[in-house]
Image (cartoon, rainbow, N blue to C red; front, top):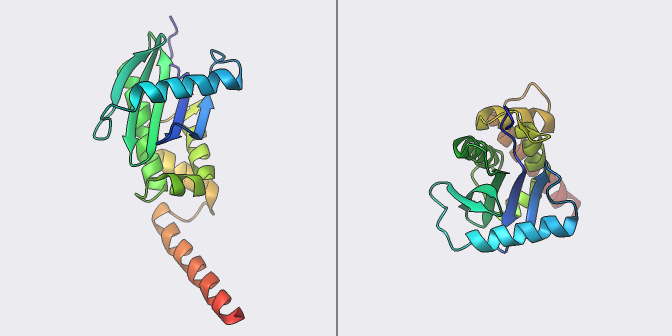
Length: 177
């Protein structure tokens, strides 16, 4: 038995079971076809459940899968059959909340795809090589945010910067017409 809890994979799928962002930390699925088959099977098994208010836990192919849905995004964390479900649920909640912070509460497929770089950085901040690094959503979002813009600007000021950049872009377009 390993001393340190490990994650087998983290999946972010859409409402049809298609990949948005996935990371595998185990060789349990050696080919891309095996990974896609696992994703489809997990999605099919969990799609009829009501995991919108809180995380659900299921056993699937000798893996513990913790999952939660919001709008058309489906979040999954997979661990070995001997992993602690509470730790897996904590990782899921950290990922879920960090994505919510980074997407500014607009958690849908379109917004997730537009900010895929932030979500992938978020995955890198949470788990490295299967080892859990961080589960606090504010810390994760803060680290990801510091990668995506200058280190001195806090997360709350980014929306103002983005708004000014958008306004500047629209003004430029209207002047060039």
